[in-house]
Length: 117
Image (tube, rainbow, N blue to C red; front, side, top):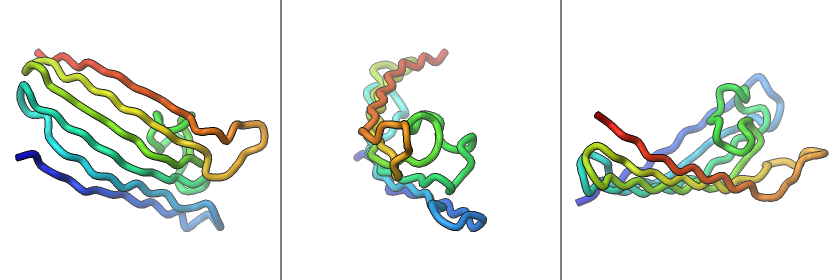
């Protein structure tokens, strides 16, 4: 059987008057422990402009700051004990429109191969 995890995280900046809430919630199935293992996860995030300092936010989210929301999907597979392949797709857009910046959805795809020895 594959493990199932439900998770979430919330941040609130009480020093800001508005745009001060950030959160994400997700579900993952599977775990990477040995050859042949796989894991898949999906989460949704919303990080408002004043919720955290940009430098403390997840740097691959949007353009690396705050004021973003959207889903993130990931898939991992371990074809052999020393190799793990990963795919992550971020599909985010601004929470609030900002003059001079696009409010279209930004797609960021990360593909990794991790070798252990």
